[in-house]
Length: 93
Image (tube, rainbow, N blue to C red; front, top):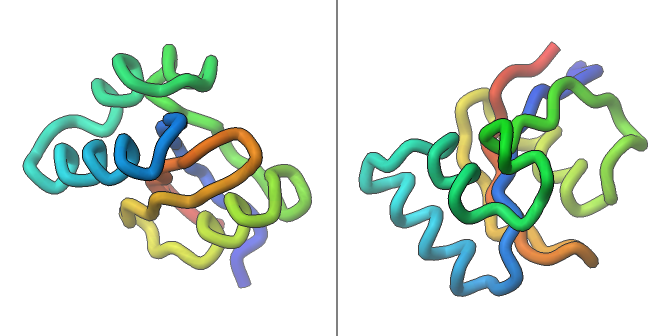
């Protein structure tokens, strides 16, 4: 059972923007570079990296998506009170 997830995310203010970012990633653009340019979250400066986190550390929709996603998966858009997230699952343990 997964105890912790290492994830990165890109936070934007609309579902449309999140979809556009997902399309750019599918087209080969770097998640890290997109996070640095597009994310509204301060973590964008570090490529969206949120580090390792366990259950109960993130808002429920974000946590659910991150824990259910496979390593390497791009997930989204995930809506929370903060906006729309594109999540990349970097690792699990």
